[in-house]
Length: 418
Image (cartoon, rainbow, N blue to C red; front, side, top):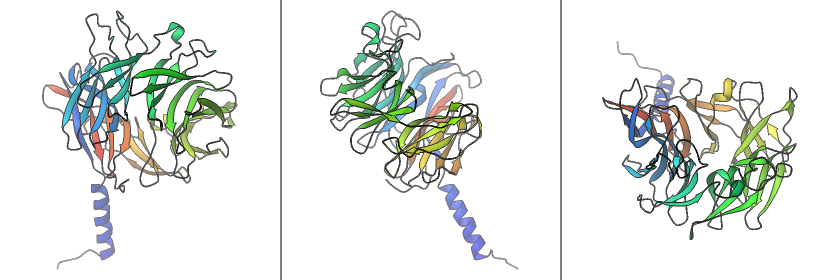
């Protein structure tokens, strides 16, 4: 006799299947290198270990890969690339070692921004010093057209006496005045040994670089990072070394004024818990991730832009390092989405966290050393159609005689369009 499933059970199974199918990750492009997958030693002509990824004004994605070959413990070289949503890849620029292996034109690229002129702006972590072999130099800022033409060095960090122009910098945000802004972790004219860091500005029309603020450890803190644009057009960021009770800063581009934002993180076991601001939440408050020295885990914190009403939500994850979160993004569902480099599996995962109470909503684990999308997610962003896009640092699928060195992937998590 033919048996039928109860409607409720059948509906539940169909819903669960649809839900699972809607959360499939796909490798849009895989970076491959020549050589043995076991030894992972060889040249990567398109680059390897992809990192920064942005969606351009025309819908094409642009990104950087950290190295041009594997076989050493640290990456060297690197590339700038574009990839369409359909997977069409184009190599735009390769950072070459030069005649003396000095990487005078940059070594190991970081993130990207697209300026109002349509050009791509980015930085390298090292290089920029003539006649220097290895990981010397404090990096540089560059500009390149979206078709790969017109590569131009805009500024070499620490090119002034005592690194007064800043050192180890990153272009991070586009201001409402049409200029690009970023921070340097060291350098400047502050009171720290080696400088306390700076905020700088790049003018797209001329490519001019200018330091607009110098940090001082006793008044504004030191080692700034994470510059983000606020809804009112000003900037917020965080400092790694801060005056007591101060962690964030507020910079107003129109006046050049910077104020330290007091955030009184509580003492735990005699030491302050600490966090970094990463994103504005749906209610206009600042949110970030915090940890406690000596305790395993990570949690969400919320604070008003003036530093008041700090709330530390309970740890959403209690594993060591909290899975090594690489950033935080407010998605179209109103929740924060976070790529974890290691995650619960050791190969990374993607989680969503509620801004209302800091609780973990779900964990997606499509990553492994044998997965088509690779392992160790570094970045996550959302496209206008609701799809999540990101990069993985290693692995993926490749043909015989090659090995995969990371991917650009997409993930349908069932999120609504932006």
